[in-house]
Length: 327
Length: 305
Image (cartoon, rainbow over all chains, first blue to last red; front, top):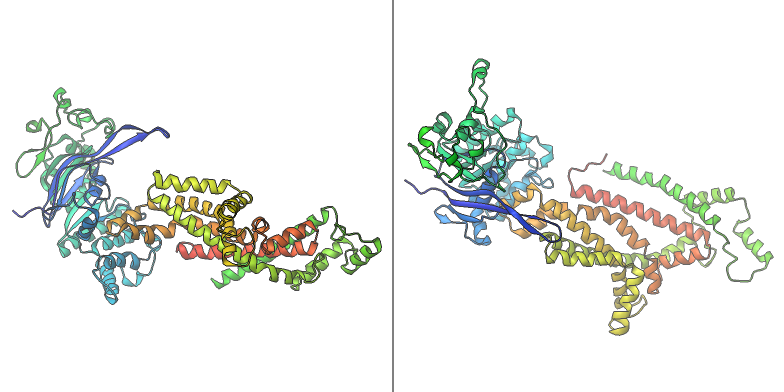
């Protein structure tokens, strides 16, 4: 087996929380990402799902070092990159790109599309002179925008068009790994499908490795080879997309999948749903033992005692639940 | 664009008209007249003078005659210093105020932007609190205190710079600092605030993800948006620096239009006061227009309507 392109080992991102204006005291630590291990093989697409606040975006930002890691390691192309100093890390960045969630905020409103796309090319020495113009129009065509719009500003485009620009921007540097951080959740449903198809097409065309983050399991299922489910900063289930989607093993994944509406009114009425009570616990004060046990319909007293590790349940499928054999 | 500028310029006319009207009647309300200051003039001479300058006519007649003259580009004679007309006095004195104002502006921009941007890069650390403390002090100390303090320290104790005058390059350092520091302090606070706001935006994260150096992120992506509040302030600030330097001009004995204006006010030199006020008002309007144009250039989303 080839070596994974991205290797996360026990990755932790904790944020200290302070209170008080004059005498600042430490209130506690938000464990946004709390020991995540995940491999992404070259050419593979891994979908990462979980509800709001579970640490998906923080994980993505920690990988590309937009937030500092507190612990664990990030390996990329067989090198440990989490220990690199900033100038050395900058040399890696072109091969490790992020597509951001909100195309309304992630593009500089004072730069034309051309400037935004040309800047990384010039800074990283990938093109100069007339080459830049050619590369920028190629990129715009690649994402389905007419190159004649390259002198326009972001506010002159629609949301879907802006996300196309953001994708072109990420692809400008010909990355090996693209992390898409909820690339469609800020868009209308009708536009979501177009952008997902675009991402799927570009993945085939450019042989991209993709870490695709979403809170919508059906979106992830459409694109991914494998799915990772995150809850309160930890992975609770990981496996081949079809397995996780059709035979979920972790109670949380079951609840997520049962919440997807079925596009058939008759079956929709009889759909069995796993109801969850309460909000997810605060990552500032996570529950003891399994982080999911306060909301789990199958919880037992011993669930509050130890944190269950990810355990294999066949076919590369793993789940973190102490009642795994009964699930 | 050109249409917009022309429309804005036409808008100056009613504003200037209102200013001229208010000032014309206000200064007539002040007790005393231009010729009863300190000299002993006989009643006969006084009446002749008033007849010569047509000050004996009814007030509304004087008012309309003045407006008529202004419309023809004539700001009238100076009562106090009849060797030149008001327009000539402005042309003679204003270049000095302009020069002083521009030096002050340079001091304000260089000091203010450096302090503000430095402070914004590491908020709530020593490099933030240090410059901001000085900025607060700069805002609080009025220039009639700062000027004499600087003279005391740098001229009298250390003997590095001249106490007053406006001849040699070294004469101009202390007035420029005295005039520029309060504005530098405002600019520091404005640019810090503006930069902090822009640096927290999502597109800055995008710029970092592109793999740009921190310097490029700050200078190329954040600065244009971050100095927006400074640019907005620059209109009134430039006008204030060029026209509002009468305190500094008095402290350092500088022959500018500001000290001329103060003299005219004390001597009830009606036409001189009116002329200077109108001139200053036109300058302020002009700089505000320039700032609006600059803002549109800095932010492509701004459109002329």
